[in-house]
Image (cartoon, rainbow over all chains, first blue to last red):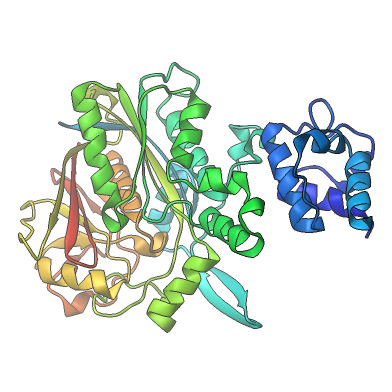
Length: 84
Length: 362
């Protein structure tokens, strides 16, 4: 399973996004606000989810903020961290 | 001070709402669900009275519920049903106090939070699990949803949680701190609870639940929420009123029972509690309804709901199970009977002889 697919699944499961299917989450859809509708508490949960499921720690929010925009940006961040 | 009961919202193993409870009382039978827990490669299968919260999204949009756990969803559902039943939905509820009585609190979320801490450490503990695991979380969800700005409190005193919390409701109303109290009693099932109960009671929880076999363990685990709208006004007493609430310990100061009241006892198949009923009750007309909703500390609130419904209907429903009654001098209510002028009292014993007595009248 690709990082993007796994991300979508764990987002739905851990954030309890009822009535949302993985294929309904577009890779470039905004995770917060008008897009998927996540909020600031979800951002904290997202940091936990990324560490728990991918072993990647987001320590610095200055660095994390651009990563937490879309599935594409978050997957890219995770892949870069895992690679090196 | 009398507390009038103007609305009831309830959900348990028998279904949701006052009509479902009345139907269960009329039928006299609710079959527990067969549940199973996988552990260490083995499957533990057992009966349990589980609660469905279908219909909650009629009151609250699904999206607003996604951070709310099962414990708080059960709470919100029964709270909504109680306010609807009392005709208070949608009005100004700023002077509505909220009091919740629970024996265990939000068990599943608490254990989920602890699991996340133990498995992944401090940095991966879920903030949502944490915020829902604190005891007053469910009451806070209710207060926020209904925009009540009056006091909101959760009381936990295990088996005595319900009478203890009722005393606080009485105080708030007497002091004029609130106009009404939304009073709820709630406990939830979870797999860890099943594990603990199995360690304590081994095969003693396979049912059937026999409340009057006082010396034997026959409890069947249950869960549910029962809410009541309480007020000072006699004109609101659709389900009668609560006259008095007494807490004590039978081993220290023996319980004096009101002479003519019909008794609904909270015997639920726990031998440790059962022995106190056997000791304190002789030659009395009693009923017990635990076989309709199972065994859990907040079930004392379900006995209260049955008493309130009986007052409205003017009759006491038959005890669903009477086995063991012949071994005692009790007159178990085996068929429904008119209440006449009799009042009802709900009696609950804890394992150490602690008791709570709630007296009601029309």
